[in-house]
Image 1: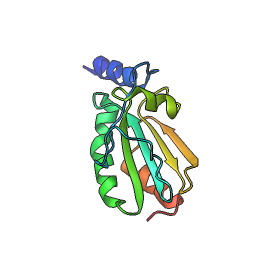
Image 2: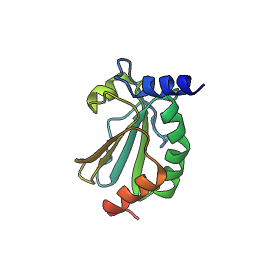
Image 3: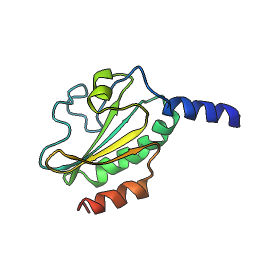
Length: 129
């Protein structure tokens, strides 16, 4: 069992060749042209709905979207469904989280599972309470 979990986790973090996306903000699930959101701190979580560490992050991302609604944009992109987004954001492993300032400049990138406390801490560093 432990061996299978390690293999599954490693498989999700290895280089990705098939990629895709869906936003926690349910506006236009396939339209990522406005991501990062100009004028607002944006956090993008690039992963896949079937990746184990990504699945572990899903409830955290949903909670963060509610907590930061109106203060920051929280977006999930499934790179197994929207391949072009993985190339656009230069993703080679999932999950990957990217934080952008209000001007749309990337300021921080993290690869792997990112817990709620770490997300909150980074949002504070970026001036979002």
